[in-house]
Amino acid sequence: MKHTPETVVLLDFGCSVSQKLARGIRDNSIYTMVMPRTVPVDRLLEEAPVGLIICKDAAAAEHPEDLKKFQATNIPVMELVVEDDVNAAVDAAVKFCKESCNCHCIWKLETFIDEAVADIRAQVGDGTVVLGLSGGVDSSVVAALIHKAIGDRLTCVFVNHGLLRKGEPEQVQEIFQRNFKMNLVYVDATDRFLDKLAGVDEPEKKRKIIGKEFIDVFAEAAAKVNAPFLGQGTIYPDILESIPFDGNPAGVIKSHHNVGGLPEDLKFKLVEPVERLFKDEVRKVGKLLGLPSELLDRHPFPGPSLGVRHIGAIKRETLKILREADAIVTEELRAAGWYHKTWQTFAIFVPVKTVGIRNGCRSYDYVIAIRSINSVDAVTAQVVRLPWELLEKMSDRIVHEVEGVNRVVYDITAKPPGTIEWE
Ligand code: XMP
Image 1: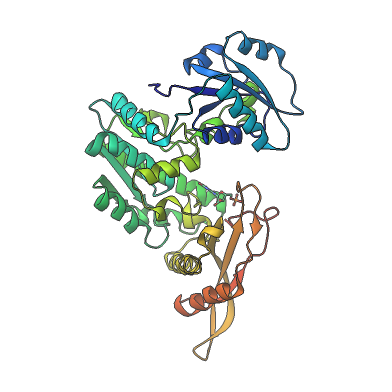
Image 2 (image 1 turned 30 degrees about the horizontal axis):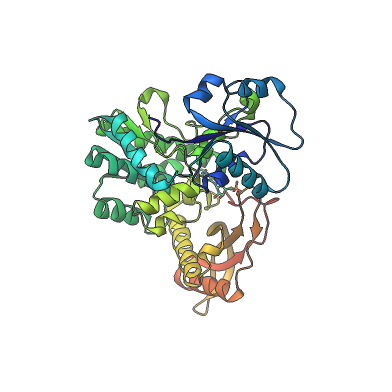
């Protein structure tokens, strides 16, 4: 399975920016992986690395035993202490790769695609693959890659849980079924989800219902496809963040394959062709495979979708209000050239009625909130100062075009203390 000729492994000895370093080195066409310092040498050697970079923060503890175990491999080793400047650390690492490891700097995403296609064909043989397509970047790129490898032996399942944004189900069908000519099973499970969600206003409960129902609906559709392989849009940070740092499972940031994962008893063999790529590399691969930018360059969108942007119990009428308002926010944001200047911008349905005036009469209608934030990693976020004219335009259109809304407010809370979603 391994074709990439020159791999450099970053060994994490307590480095808060190991992913950033690895990604930075890849910009120089050098393929890098990150492994914890506790990795067994046998496992390391499976990757046949041409160089090892021991990376650590200035304050990290020494681990001489681990250091010795890597030095004993006779692979060139560099010890890199990362001070404040990650770029300087990357420059030093790249110099080491070129000068001490004789890297030829030949790794490219184009070559990655060819290798991934060959790997998928080798893994799947003449078998079939089923893939849950959400319309998000990762599953879309994986669909395009697997389709390139095995064509109509791939079946994608798209579950419409009724909480999608306006036009989303149509867009996914247009791109994958009509343009790419993929086998796409479209399951409209709107009623099933909304019936289960009826009357539930507790946010965690709503999330659990959506998550469980999603797995059930997908599993039923996948069972009909009856494929031995399951395609998954796992990406490299999912893997890295599921490795316990220092061997301690409590140090896991995310639990890979358990995040909305499928029950073990489904017994699929997994096909995960982008599991070694960072998010922006996945986007670039998508672009190279011909996926449209509306799909690749979209704002992050939560799995439970509009479900976490509709406060309180979800009703069909109020969900429609949110969907229409959200579409107006996005449309105006794009028209004003602000879409790509913000990390996330969206509407929230607030189940509070206030008094207003519509057509000269007293109205008693709902509130829509608009939230626009910038962030680098979603851990902290700053409020975007959207132009006043743009906010007024959004507000004006929402109160005039969306029946049931007579007031629009702008959320000016940073994260922390606010979260990005209202839930
Ligand atoms: P919060 O609201 O916690 O959100 O500040 C941080 C980021 O995570 C996104 N988000 C999710 N993404 N599944 C996802 O894939 C989810 O269940 C989910 N919940 C929140 C949110 O949009 C923001 O970018």
